[in-house]
Each structure stands twice: as C-alpha cells, then as structure tokens.
Amino acid sequence: MTPDSTAIVFQGLQRDFCAPEGRLYPLLAEQIVARGVIPKLLDLLARAWEARIPVYFVPIAFSPDYREVARAQGILGAIRDAGALARGTPGAEPIVELEPFLDRMTIVPAKRGLCGFGTTPLHEMLTERGIRTVAVCGLLTNVCVETTARSAYDLGYEVVTLAEVTATKTAQEQAASEQFAFPLLGRTLTVDALFAELAAGAAAPPHSS
Image (tube, rainbow, N blue to C red; front, side):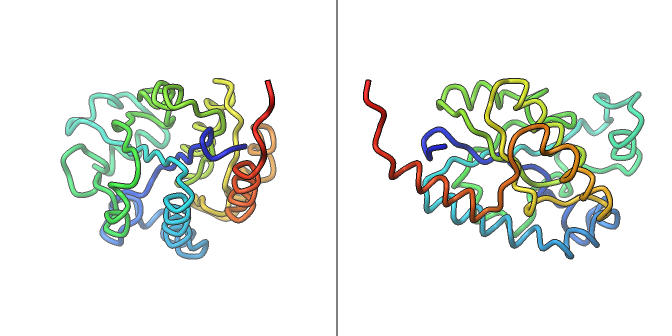
C-alpha cells in the first residue's frame, strides 16, 4: 500500500445526517456522538492532507420530488418520507465542520443510492488517478459504507475499512458489520495503522524491473 495508489472514500457528513437540526439526526445522534465520528473524521482528513493522500467525498442527494426513489422501500423510502437530502436544501449540504476541508478533497457528483460507485463516476475517477487501494469510512456503517466496500471489492480494489471512523443507528448493527461483513471484503485498520502502512510504503525502495 503506497500513498500514490491509495485513496480515502467517505460518505455521510451532510447536515440531514449529522447536524442537530437534520431530519435524520435523531436516528443517528447517539452513535455519532458516542463514537466521536465527526472529530475523528476531521482528524483523518487533516492527516491525509499532510500525507498527500487523495480523499473523495461522495454525498447523496435526490430531486425535490424524489423521483429516483419514488417506489423505494427500506432506508431510501425512509429518506424520501422524511423529506431529507433533497438537492438544493440545507440538509443536503456538508456539515459546517467539513467546510474548511472541501477544497482539499475531490467532491464526487452526488449519488442517488447507497453505493459510492453505483450512480457516480467514482470508479473512473479513481482509475484515472491510478488508485488500487480504497479506504472506506463514514456513514452509515451497515448501509452505505458496507455497500461501497462491497462494490470496491468486486471492482478489484484492495479494500480497507476504517471502522473506528464509521457509525450507524445502533451499537449492535455496528458490531455486526465489524464482525461479519468487513472481514469478508478486505482488512479493517485503525487510522493510525493506515498511516503507518502508508508511511512504510512511501519509504520502501521501488521494485526493480
């Protein structure tokens, strides 16, 4: 794993998820606060900037009439019914704490589903940059993070999950992802371990041809 072939991909730091006035915040507040996800993610972004690791932010947003999820059930139906994450509304915007970092990352065009790859050009963007390892984090652990990790795995990336920088509705759901899903898709690393490996990769001599 080397700095020039690794990217961090995160999702979920939008106001409807993470701001107290957000429409979905009551569902997530306890775990977001208990796990310290926002300060941990901001620290991750600062460290990535210092280490020159590219970061990709994949927001989610829907048309004001929610035509993309008009027949959806489950979580996308719940988002529609809550009137959350509509394009052009404050709830779809990044949280205030993220604003100082926006010019330090690549903002992917908003997805319209759970996966960071499915309805976005993320794969093409990563391929163009020569990325081989994807470190995923953000919200929600057992929904968008898992789905994105699965797609990255199927697309042939080395997948690293930064589980300490993820959160979902309950501790039980979080534990299930960490225990059962993530080990099937690659490795789970702490942020410190990620940067230690990247530093080692940067210091290693290039392979001779």
